[in-house]
Amino acid sequence: MTTLLSDVQQDFSQSPRVTLVLAPRTSLLAQDVVDTLRKIEDSWQGMPYPKLVDASGKESLGSFQVGITYQLQNNQIQFQDRQTPVQTGTITTGSSAAVGGRISVIDASATFQANGVERGSFIINWTDQSIVSVLNVVSETELEVYEPTSGIGNTYDIADDYSVFNVELCDLSGGNSTAVDDLASTISSVVPSVGTYVILAQSSNATIVESVDTAALTAKVDDIHGMVMRSIWVDTTAGVNGSGYQQSPFNNFASAASYAVANDIRRIIIEGNTATIDRSLVRYVITGIGTPNVNMNGQNLNRTEFYACGLSGTMIGVVHAHDCEILTGASGIDGEFLGCILNGSITVGGSADLHLYNCIEGDPVTLTLGAGNSTIHIHKWSGNLTLAGVNGVGDEVNVFLENGSVTIAASCTDGSINVSGMGRVIDNSAGSTIDKTNLLEPSKLLTVKKFLGLK
Image 1 (cartoon, rainbow, N blue to C red):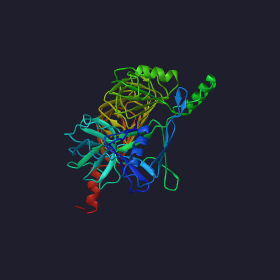
Image 2: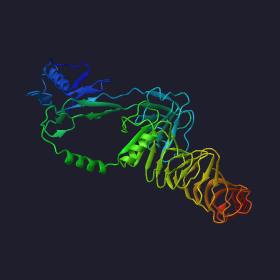
Image 3: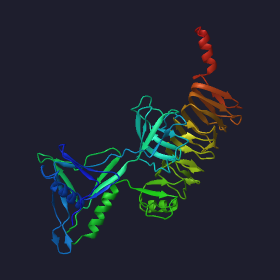
């Protein structure tokens, strides 16, 4: 018995013609495509036009059947546009400057999580006339998005009107889908549409079973596996401990780390709110989704890279951190930190070589040097920073300000502190050598202004 789907419409006026699949349908089986299009061909609307589809398959091979393959004839399939937003509202807190190419969208009245906003959704700022993809759903009232580039001001200002749309996964499955135009040239069987993306699930219902060299096949799989940078997934909020794949993550960091070490897989991706590193992980890549709090727990993390994580606890070794939050109480900090947010009291590792590039202040920052001679370079600092514990004869701190300020605490009794750029220094030191030769302070600006006779 053939099937005529009532939510499928045929447009004969185009070339190639279009079979429109109405929302909310998201899936079409090959058999339904063939049955429905043949019914339309036989209808009074379709009879004047050339056929819409050719199909083959389902020949019997004993207990198997050959899979269906259909070829659309000067015709393509399109899933209907998704035009209904899952969230609309107005911005209640204006966006700050972009960090790592990302900005925040904040609406205190929104319910982003309850409404199903997800990574890959897109947001239109009607006021700014910009459109971007959602990177992270931070909370019910905050989204993290890529920095807009196509708008008027490319910011999210208070009272800006916006709408969020989800992108729905659609699929053509149960067979092989192909298409040709009116000249028999191959074309895509799918037409893109707003708010959807379509997967073509090709199929073969009949297969030839031959003897398999298991060892050779395993070696080939391992060879391919070695060319791909596989990731181990861990979601500490999951109820069931999975296999480490994205669809089935481990629910605790210990399982993820054990599997990664045993299989020499160097990338771990953390979902959920928290994770505690339970062993030495040297030269790994750890990436957070939603900035989880990762407790470094006194482990050796030398040459490990962190992305989009909140880092707490004590670390050992030199790390590379990108777009992370360094949380108050973090200690042993050493290495390169790019585009990170610094919060509260942070202790630098002993004999560290620390570089902070384009980092910003979250909470008021106090950076305390550990025992041993350390070198610290702070590039392009625009917040408020307190330096403490510069008391080793070989301690050297270099700060380049961009309208920021540095307070040098009384615990700075030795070593050298060099401050340059534009900003302010409050010197409460008790013995450290302070060099402000290349610093332009507000008082100097007033002197220059008076010298030039400017009001």
